[in-house]
Length: 256
Image (cartoon, rainbow, N blue to C red; front, side, top):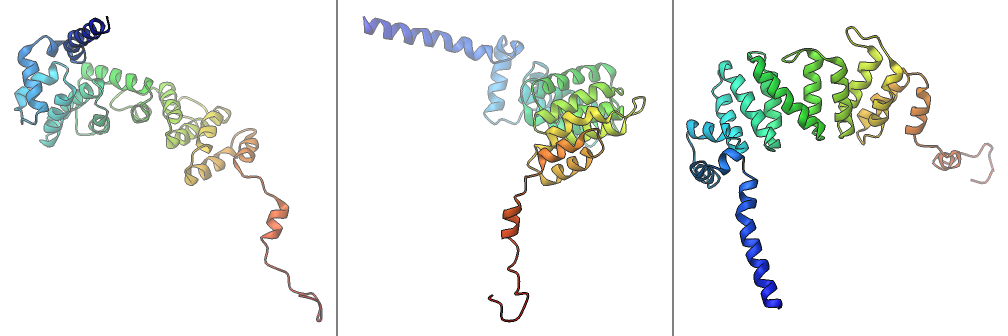
């Protein structure tokens, strides 16, 4: 009976393996033997041509998209930055997180001109990554929405993204969010009280510089004293006294 069960389990695993392998591939590649073979060659280290990389990238292969985007970027021609950003966004969408910094860099290239359709798709990729907890995506998109390039200005959404980034561990995003509320933005008046959640996150940072800046900003919000008190360590008068140097005798002949 055990032998029968063992054989059945092995057969089930063997039958499931090819299905699982296809599932992790983009559908366009999983259904194409030629694309699967081309992808296999790429993963084996073969240096593919631009046409081959682009074919894989257009089929949803993230690594090929990142490599093709890098080639476009390295040409040093602003005319290719739009395409490079597009293919970096495919890489990010397919889980190639290493491509995020280059995607953000291409989007802030002032020499580039981006098509509106491309920007809509890229914005969707960045929003998706931010919702999944990617602090770089959230902070990077927030900067662009505050600046108004290459996306249109959207300060409320930028603040939401800065809060997401701060909650994901980006202490600088927390400081920027607090400043945004304290100083106000074009069309939005200052609202110092709204800075409290951001300052609480900044004060929890292990970075002394961030903590010092947050303590300074806490003085500018109503009731900020409680944030300062919670962040500063309690002092022990007796402990402080014990750390003082020994006092000298006040008169001659006194015991040292």
